[in-house]
Length: 115
Image (cartoon, rainbow, N blue to C red; front, side, top):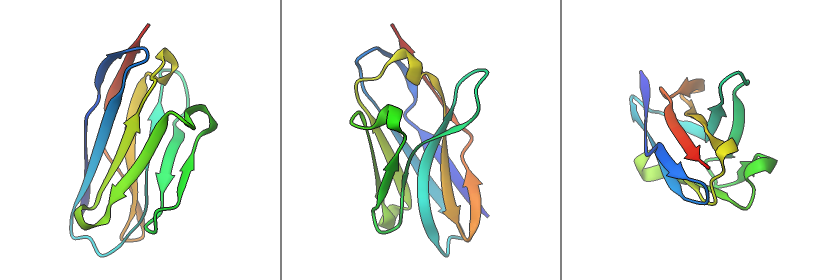
């Protein structure tokens, strides 16, 4: 089994920064893409950012220029640096990994941005 464990969420004022981390563990043979999704109350889960095993990145338009995704393949870990946070970024953030050719999800971490 593959587990994803997230950390780094919390409460921050508008304009502040947070860094999320997600470490994959277990019997890992392959991790292709890794990324972050978020779900705000009453809304569908949406892609925030993704990164391939080679380092190619993809961002939602709403976070381009403010968020940066990165990964450490040796540690099977993906990071999300979030700058200039706004109240509309408030959501539960979920880590995702295409690990061992299956979709894997973390338990989610709450990010709350106060105005």
